[in-house]
Length: 387
Image (cartoon, rainbow, N blue to C red; front, side, top):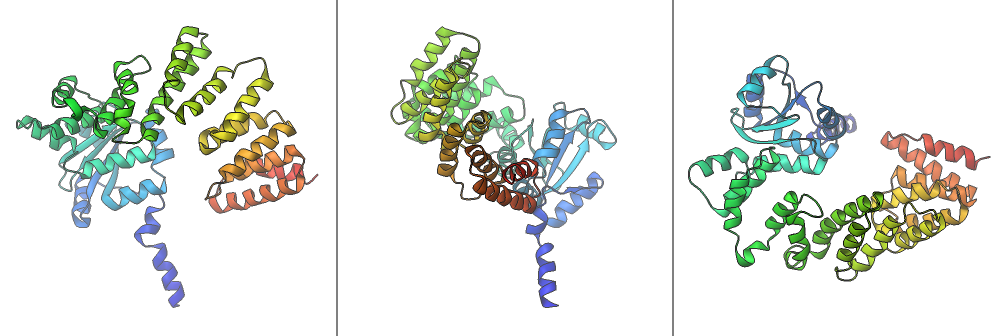
């Protein structure tokens, strides 16, 4: 009996509840406030419409995430309102909701503290909720400070960020902030954050400034953090240039990549050659460039690891599959995933090692069952390896 009670207790602890994703309260606005006061929490409102695509994506992809539920269920009473039906119509008018999805953050008394808009990845959505709990970052709090005459750098900075996140950037307030940033003050982590938010692309003024001053910003952040942002913009520009046959732009991006210090320079140029040759008629040359890049650098990047594994395994060539296996074995994630096991099984199958292909496929099927994931491909590999 004691054991059963202990198990039941675990099932109904906050951790067990939170792991299910966000829990949304159903009731009236006054009941939401009463519940928030009783539990000592703030209120989060998902302001959505039936026709809003990003709203549906948030509901399907982000709200159910365990880490999102852990944060929001702990700190907020969560509430959903359709802005075009019932109480949502007056709510939208009262709080001037015109962009969807909009996220509004209130205290327990129903006083608006903060707001953001748009589709968010899980970490950014959690960061929004954290900002709404921080009196130095709350949008409405900083608006009130500004209206009261506070022009400190911190208020101007947080107000600029808050307005941008709310979908209402204000160039005048940003201009006031930049006037406070003279000399060495310019090269701070928060200024890198603000400039990177504003960077509109490869030719943009903010991006060019960050590129030219990357070493000064790296001194307060890190080479990796600064260069990761800069390189992602450069690679996007390179892909666009190559895809559209724009040789001058391609050459310009390559010249910028050559200005980085080692070891970033070698890695970036190796990946740039992969991009430049992606559409080449000489597929063996392209595959060799991918293999050389992945063997040395790319296996550390999960997105590229699986993207190039999928692409090269589609050749169904045993020699190429052997190279893919090298990347997958080098990566060897500490927490094994169904996806990783699937690619390993496929690579062994193409390589002709049926025994290992079966073993990894079965391991992936077992893990998929535990995690309630699709195992269709793995079952196909298991069947093929068993013939």
